[in-house]
Length: 98
Image (cartoon, rainbow, N blue to C red; front, side):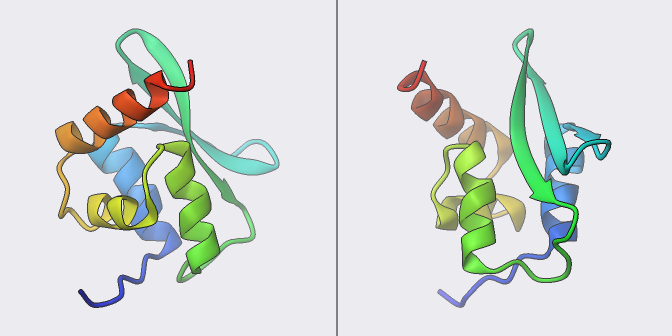
């Protein structure tokens, strides 16, 4: 499978447009919050200084907040994975840490 290059805008659009997350730019980072089953979760955190194409380390950092592997996160952002599948993985893996 060819290498996937994600940009900051790809990730922001996925959080906001695919999940309906709320974006907060007021602090030292850009945070994304998801209201899920009556609770609010921090699902993403980006640095204000990040721009353009994300490096592997940056993609890994944002993927971890959703408890996804890098390849899973990339697939979700580029629409190869639907929200129900991604949320199911997140719920399952999140439960292991509660």
